[in-house]
Every structure is written in C-alpha cells, then in structure tokens.
Length: 192
Image (tube, rainbow, N blue to C red):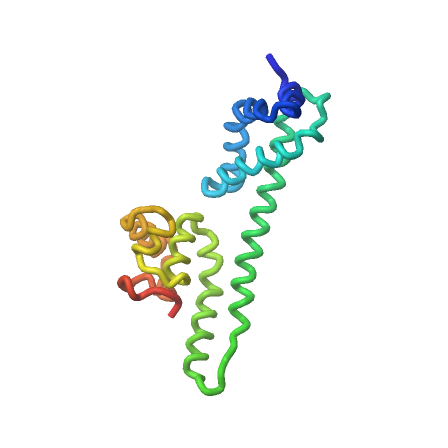
C-alpha cells in the first residue's frame, strides 16, 4: 500500500495525485471537525483543511508515513480560528449594543434604541447558539430587512424552508423572541 508521504511526494510533481490523500482521510477529518465544531462548520473546516494541506504539502516531513496527524493538526487550528472569529463577532455585537448614538431632538427614539440594544445583549448568546443556517435566516430577516421570499432567494432555499427555520428560531429563543419581530407578517421584521 502506498504511504501518505509517497502520495504527497508524487503530488509535488503532479498536483492531481493529492486527491488520493483526500479520499483516504476525508471521512476521519470530517468526523473530527463535526464533533468539534458542529455539522454547520464541519464541511468548511474539512475543505479548508485539505486546501491548507495542499498548499503546504512541500513542507510535509516525508519521513512520516501517515499524514493523518498532520491533517488533524491543521483541522484543530482551523477549528480554533473559526471559534475565535465567531466569538469575536458576537462580542462585537454585544459591545456595539452599549454604544448608542442619540439625538437630543429624538429622546423617545433614543430610548427605543436603548431598549432594543439591551434586549439584544440578552439575545446575542442565544443567537450565537443557533445553527449557522438558522442564524443566517434570522439575521437576514431581522437585520437584513428582507421578507420571506427575499431571504429564500438569498439562501437558495424554498420559502417554506425560511418559514420553518424562523418558526424553529422562535421556539429556540423562547422568551427572548419578543425582542425580535418574529411574530409578525412579511412586513414586520427587524429589531423593534
């Protein structure tokens, strides 16, 4: 049986050979990524792992027969980077909620914005806990100011899928759903 190091060595001259390494290890790397990062991010991490490995294949220590530890190391770093980026994004949303521009001529509107941002601070961790598909659907609807059909078009899914996802979000956010306008019709979306 050909070793991983032989496949990598041959791929330096013929890049198409690298596909053999993917065929050998994709299932294990994909399962690891799914366990560590969830189903939504696992495919991206799997793809990026092999992209990084392909780019760095010239630095692989050919004395090693198996590339599995090397690939799992790359995946681990990508998972950490993915988690850090997502956490930073949600921290910035929470931080932004404390910086609210107010106009002296519109005290009532400013109070409404303060209330909305306060509610968002409570919801942000719950929104972060949603699957990427549900979170994207929610944020396109609530913040993107899109109706169901427009969200469906953005995500290339049927309108019924958007309705189903938003219904699931309502259930998952529980008491917090009152803060997001998820209970209205097509024209009732966004932060209130």
